[in-house]
Image (cartoon, rainbow, N blue to C red):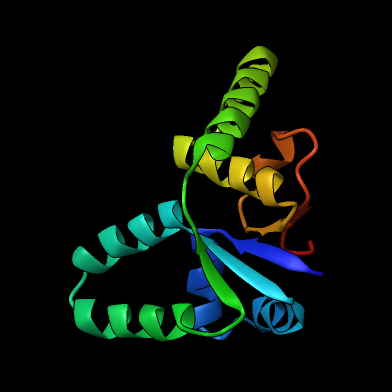
Length: 132
């Protein structure tokens, strides 16, 4: 089973028609979206002038049978603690919400799809980033 977890910037790119993300999502057996990402998108939508339109697009996407929203649970918290501690020890902090995404990716075994290169600092993370 091929599973991917979309970072917020990957979802935004997907909604804008990014061919790389569209292809990856189409090939995946399961496309995960973190509850953390839903929160980031909600905040962005609320700060813009097209809240209802953007929310409708997100809801259509989330209702697809291959898409699942990941909650934050106990195992996620344990993964978060390990990732955050390892990054602290390396002196390579990343944004806190991205630590949560890395933890969920590691928890599920999904490939994290992101355009953020700072995820490369997370040891053991299965990561896809835009080809250079």
